[in-house]
Length: 177
Image (tube, rainbow, N blue to C red; front, side, top):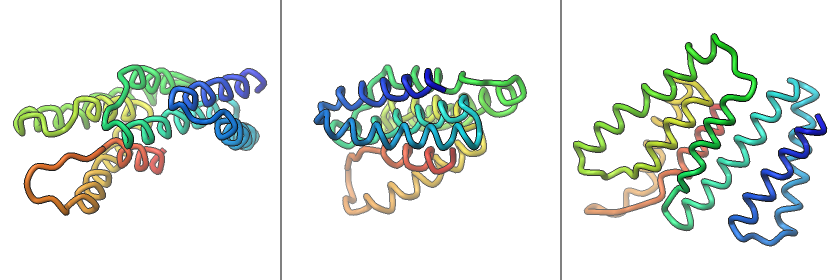
């Protein structure tokens, strides 16, 4: 449990520093994340709590970073897959994780190539890596609702428009996790 608290604290403060936030803001939210970790550890065990807190941290980082820059850092996808490997069992790996990695993202990748790259590749990699963590069925629902919400809230422009899609994905992946 102590290792989990140290890991979550390090992870959160590192990503807060990458966003160039004030250290005081990072420390306040670190206490919130540590409290969440301790509460979940008590209810479900340390491995599950570590997965949830690390996934929450990286999703919040991507949400803020993509809102500001409209890009997703490429290292975050590997971190998400690494989070999915924590306390992984064989039934989940072959029943949900690997299908969640491949099945939802491949049709969107093909559809994106037909539309001449209207969706960013970072968004597609985010869908694949988050599908590995949350599973195939939750991944489908998260993608479907994120697309619906993004189109509903960004329908003002009729011609060519660009918006950050990752915040919608992050919100719904967190909701379905």
